[in-house]
Length: 189
Image (tube, rainbow, N blue to C red; front, top):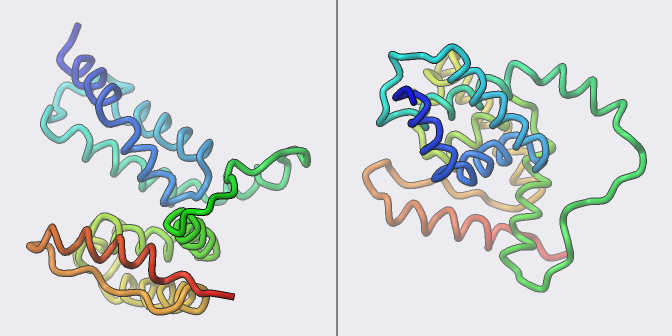
């Protein structure tokens, strides 16, 4: 078995659920997230790329997920119109406030444009700086700031105030802010 095949096998066995979770934050649909991960894996490993660094395979796949999501928006939008009318939501009722808050956040993310959503996810989930987001999406920093501003403003209209994550060096506090954001931003009717 080639080194890249071993890397692919290890990545899928250990990090598949994290990759699907990342894709879910971008697209908001579990099945579409699984498709995004599959497409990204195929794009990344289809040619048996011998030059891929084994220690950063997940980074390559995450980048492929992001570009596939942003570039494929029109294609996905077309297929939404022809989906079957009979279907059920995968979300079940729960008494847990954390689950309800996450559902509210997912619904608020669904109202954003693809670029706004990508910027918000990269800022608040991946904890990237504006410069890092600009580089990841091949945009100017000004465009990223505008997308973040518009996206956060729209989400605040639905959820209430959204807190900015702390600086990159404060990893423990970043987890607390994200948890607090997901739990406390839910508005009561």
